[in-house]
Length: 202
Image (cartoon, rainbow, N blue to C red; front, side, top):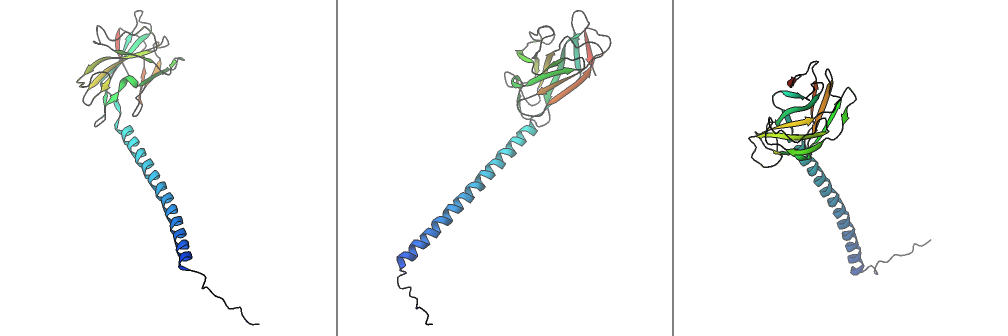
């Protein structure tokens, strides 16, 4: 049986150009999709790194002792006095946006105490805290350059935290300071068996 002769005389240069253009368009579209996905991934990774660095570099620490101030009856603690500062190399933190929570082993629990502002003197006018109310404030600022509640490097702030009526002698309590950026600063102390007007807490 004779083979049928083939002829490609009809395959012109124009058709070859159309096929070439189609391949180029498909390859360009595919490369655009791949590059777009790569750029998105790199931007997400960059954002994650920046967020992680910001979180890690914004941390507070307790400076000195933590003091408890008893109420007039000396049957419970009225509030706690804590001095905080930034860790070495930390970035400034706005304490007015900080979430302060309280828990004790007598059933006392305040998930978000109310921030009431900045006082002028920790002895005569610490802050307008209501007795045994879920409130906290900044009583004093030392070496602070920025106005308001921004905690700067080399600065210290005295924080007063109001305690509930469950803060009785021999009670263990925890206070968590959660800034908007940075790590949580937990403080756990035990109220002594006999209360005076002011006492250090350990």
